[in-house]
Image 1 (cartoon, rainbow, N blue to C red):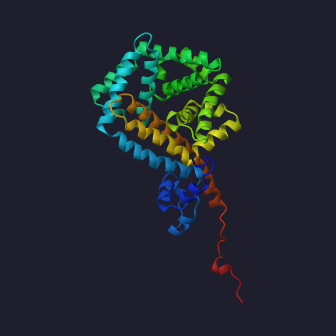
Image 2 (cartoon, rainbow, N blue to C red; image 1 turned 30 degrees about the vertical axis):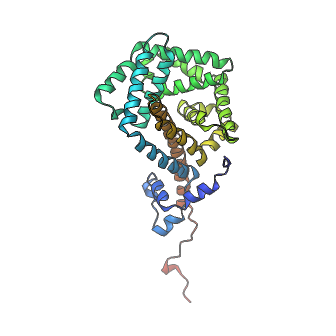
Length: 320
């Protein structure tokens, strides 16, 4: 496997790609327009912007695949089934599956591909008080074991919290429960345990481990959406940044996505595919926003401090 820290050639290729450059330019402030085509080609965008473009290309491919009526039908059936089971007592794990899939489909922009009748059925189950209570119970159980060192449990708690906050379900919780969830997810023990789970996946991948069993990309997205990312040490943040900033990392979840979309007669595989797609969208959006801030600042400084000297006006030149 190619080394994880070998990204320079990918970035150099992106920098020289005219189509990629013009696409990146769309989000810049209008008063930083460049004077001509030749000058445009000399501009250098941030690594984050270029990587966001690479992510976006892969995401576009994935979205086209997910437009398959068969995959949409499978994901819808799985979501209906899990959300119904999630309303029953003792079926908290089904509530988690439904919640994560529901959030992923919303984030991917595919919920409205379902028929109005199916949308209503899913919302009826998801917004049900028993379903919400079971989802919350599942979260508290994960937190309990995560505080005892269960890195997998801490990660599932993080994913549950992320799914609550990125869907329309979080406001359905009482203010007290929302505060309890926020307090629990920012507990240093939970943050450390969830990071440990992420790190173990990355270390397995770096030595050629089974990429299909990895949840590293999902963990990265959850760190971002939950705002836990801002609570990590600088060293840990750099590790996550180096992971999501490597084009090799994009290929890992993409292959996992293809694996799930290619599985026949499996109701939940389409749901896993949506969760993967949603994770990549979250990471892409993070890189896009960060890249835009860097680029806007860079181009503003260039505009204020041009490298080329402006020739003197004709009337001010010395006449000999």
